[in-house]
Length: 140
Image 1: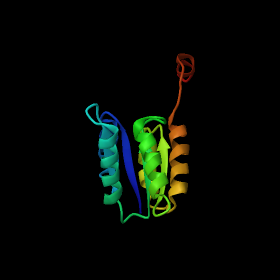
Image 2: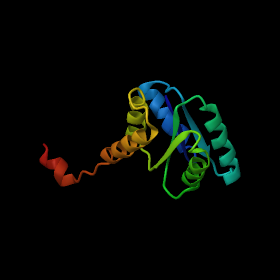
Image 3: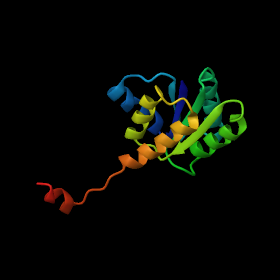
């Protein structure tokens, strides 16, 4: 099974995982690493490395980060570059709840971390919608 590490600013990672637990139950091999105001980037790096070690028995690891360009995303990319040859890893950014839920469920049949990252990205895009008042009023 591919492990998932959700990480982001504030309590966004643990909040996302909490929502997944409510809707789907507690996912296997999935952990949240928050980057709180009190943390340094070194603190986050230590926590992410610990999460990687905890998922050592997984066939790969997918980092799901809140925003591209942020410290959690950059550190996930650095860890992927550092350990990616030993253990298959990939990074996504811009997560939303539907994306995390679908990615979690897809691990039952997707065994390649790159394919799972692509599925996550595509589902994340599908989950973002915009509806104007006019469109909604026309549906009545």
